[in-house]
Length: 319
Figure 1 (tube, rainbow, N blue to C red):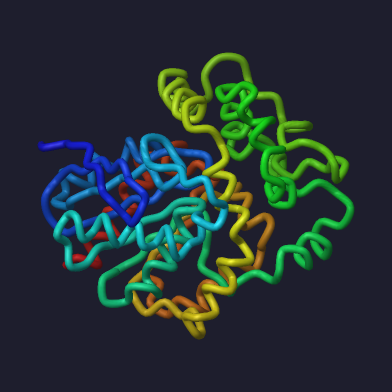
Figure 2 (cartoon, rainbow, N blue to C red):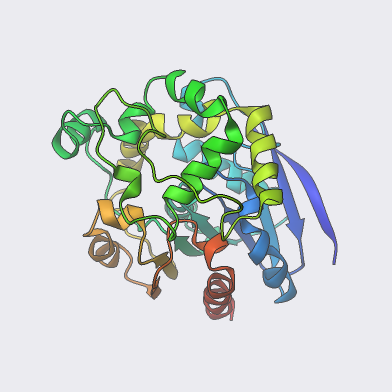
């Protein structure tokens, strides 16, 4: 089957997009700190099932452009990247599949392009109302203690920590948010002026159970080359994203939608009411599934079950 890397232009940004298959278009949107590589277990089976699959390195990541301006990483701007991919591939409609930060992009695409996005499937991050201003959020939920999103707001500080040894940084992050680490390890209490990697559970020696060293090395090379400014800057646009979201009215998703996460998902640990909020805003929620014992990197931790769930949803929506 034809498997190509396409360079897609979206304004001033060039996106590196792996494209394979023929049929209805599915765009797989990765999150932080990953690459299109994170969908490696799903790409082939989805293409074999009769879909065109596009798996970009999102803006700021891997072989795609990394704009130097913080405000270039708003959700609306990234949604426009996904539209550019669909247009470049000649697709009138597409199904948006997202994980982590790719999930808010997928949800927003459904609102921003209601006649182009025919379905949404989210991993890990449920759809919800816009969050309050970050200054209020940080002080209310994490007063006088370290919180990673607050830490990410200062340009340069997190980049210096994470870029010191990209492979070690990534291994610690991937382990801490996986089903192999203690639940809540990511939020280990530490002083407000602490650092991200301080206090995280020590990864086991050798390979992670869901990420062989050969793949981790590929991630590390990409981040050593590109750096962390772009990826972290997605977090620096939360207030902008909230303002943008209010332009879409109630935020109700009309398209068919599906949701999948692990029982050790940190996003739901931080927001226990997230699934209830999603049900209220997504009336055509056709799937809501929780995989026992799985952590945040669900498509890599439990690839067969994730692929099966996505295919079940795609078959339903595309039929």
